[in-house]
Amino acid sequence: MREIEKMSFETKCVHGAYKAESGQPQVLPIVQNTTYRYYDSKDVAELFDLDSPNFMYTRLGSPTVNALEEKMALLEGGTAGIAASSGMAASFITICNICQAGDHVISATNIYGGTHNLFGVSLKKLGIDVTFIDQDLPLEEILKSARPETKAIFGETIGNPALSVLDFEKFSKAAKTMGVPFIVDNTLASPALCRPIEHGADIVIQSTTKYADGHASCVGGVVVEAGTFDWAASGKFPGMVEPDESYHGLSFYNKFKDQSFTLRLRAVMLRDFGCTMAPMNAYLTHQGLQTLHLRMERHCENALALAEFLKNHEMTDWVIYPGLKGDKYYDLSQKYLPDGAGGVLCFGVKGGKAAGEKFLSHLKLTSIVVHVGDIRTSVLHPASTTHRQLSEEEQIAGGIRPELIRVSVGLESISDIKADFDQALKAVK
Ligand SMILES: Cc1ncc(COP(=O)(O)O)c(C=O)c1O
Image (cartoon, rainbow, N blue to C red):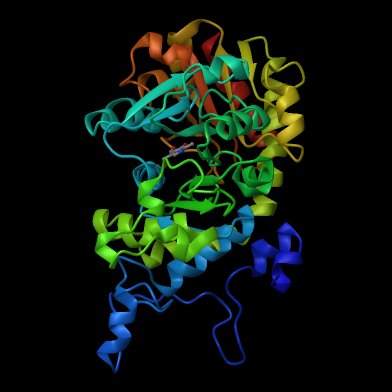
């Protein structure tokens, strides 16, 4: 085990993955190029045979992006990671790495609207069928959705924007019973609050656009594997195990063992789909990760304080925040998010949808943006924006009430945030 792996999460955020040797830049450098020079074409042939860890062409990997990938794998506690151009790209290549036309995936309903659309519409067009389930159903009910062609079960640590908390123990049992990987989108928690691999996840996805970057400066995604899934056991994953003709009959699982999922993502998915993260974005995301532990602590503290304030406000009907006593997911948040339930909360203004819209128009400090995880407090009305492609029934099934306002609580002083919400709520009266 490397020295850094034994250290605390905070130290991993600050020092993980990149370490300057004597005379080298103290900060991770941006290697901005497309390709790498070799003296001997035999060395290049080795790269094409996946026999060399060196870099070949930036679509398949590059030093700055690689440092980010290593840092994420370290923070999530996985064996390897790969960066992608966005969180959506990360989810897409994760599914495509193990599914093809005719295959099936089980997913929690309470997931990000974009992922819901990817699963329910775009993957369907490719012949991959996704069954959406109520994540709070008992295990036996969830297992009723299993089919011989089921290849994965998927959920979000904290559902965006329903703010449901995933029952990892139950989902992990379901995955094991079906012999499929348990895939978790950990975007809203970030590894500072929850490390799904410690609770049985086989693959963890993050939209790094959110808390990893944290400053709303770049779009990106990352996939980390636990390295524990036996891809050969069930016989369900020929792409991982059987000879790949595009690599002279190589078996990813036999050759790369606990990093085989990641190696296949790189060698096949990035090669064919080209959804690579740019070095500049990897640099910015890495920069953000260095303060992730501190930011998440304050995001959680401010979110809990704002949730309590809104709960007691005469102009609100309801508040959802998993860290709030009495919340439907309070117990699960105490179990899986003991250091804080994240920086996002939802609430309904008295007077329904129209009052909610009026409230938004009176905010001064707080911004209306399509984003969460920024240092600046931001709000959004999902029913008319991120989730507008879904029918009202689908929205409600996904936890989106018409009057719901999602708040991403930032790092400003909590008294200034409360004052801004208070004056905008009073203006609705
Ligand atoms: C939970 C979650 N997963 C995935 C995504 C997609 O990420 P990106 O916008 O980086 O493609 C988002 C975006 O909001 C998200 O909130």
